[in-house]
Amino acid sequence: MHQPNHLTNHLTMNPSLELIDIGVNLMHRRFHADREAVILRAQAAGVKTQIITGTSLESSIAAAAYAAERPELYATAGVHPHGAQEVSDLAQLRLRLRELVTQPKVVAIGETGLDFNRDFSPREIQEDVFNAQLELACELHLPLFLHERDAHQRLLEILDRFGKQLPPAVVHCFTGTRAELEAYLERDYYIGITGWICDERHGSHLAELVQFIPADRLMIETDAPFLTPRDLRPKPRGGRNEPAFLPHVLKKVAASLNQSVEQVAAASITTTKRFFRL
Ligand SMILES: [Zn+2]
View 1 (cartoon, rainbow, N blue to C red):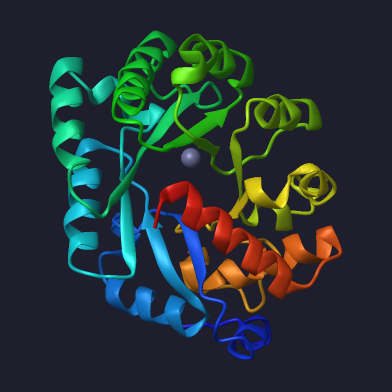
View 2 (view 1 turned 135 degrees about the vertical axis):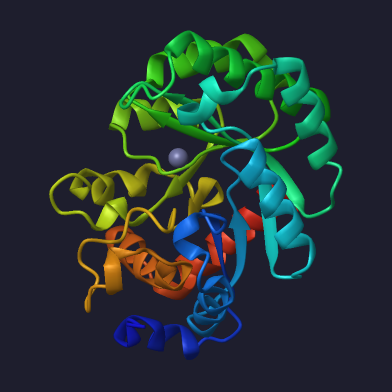
């Protein structure tokens, strides 16, 4: 497998900086054949810990079971807006998620939110499934792992209804505007930055915007196997993203902030541990 050696070297110089990828879709079928090798490559690149994103009830159950066996892995439990219409019974969903989050390695509710870009599920159904997960997160006071695409205004309207009840929330894979960023930060939400920041066509504004994210609100993630950084060389086989490429995202964030990689790594690790209570 292609490893970006030129980017991992600086981390091997700092073995104490053990990065945490807050968003890895490790139960995705594209990792079925070599999941263990993917974890080992990530660790060799300095990415010691991964939080596996649960995107459906099925993948959340699989993620929880997989994380339970491995000290360096954690999981979220939730239903992505794309799959909202597959939820046939909201009461049943609450019940199953409630069971899942009793497991010690399940550290957040999500991925949940709204996606009005693809509209894979009807919007009213996305909102119902989102609301059910928000109610549960509020009741159990569990961190929220949020997904939002082209639905900023509506997402805020729904979140604002919960007011001070709302637990800490991270807007994962933030790709929005400065005004959107400020609206999230005003509400004290955390921000997840992916390899989108490396995309010179659509993500260059993020290189400007990261300076407005306080260090104690900034986390980094790959969203693997998706969002392979466009400037990664050599390009990975099959174009698949991996948690081993998190140092590449870190390096871009650090350069954008005009700070050292070590400084940004240390701050994001502290922020991540506090947010997810690792
Ligand atoms: Zn997402």
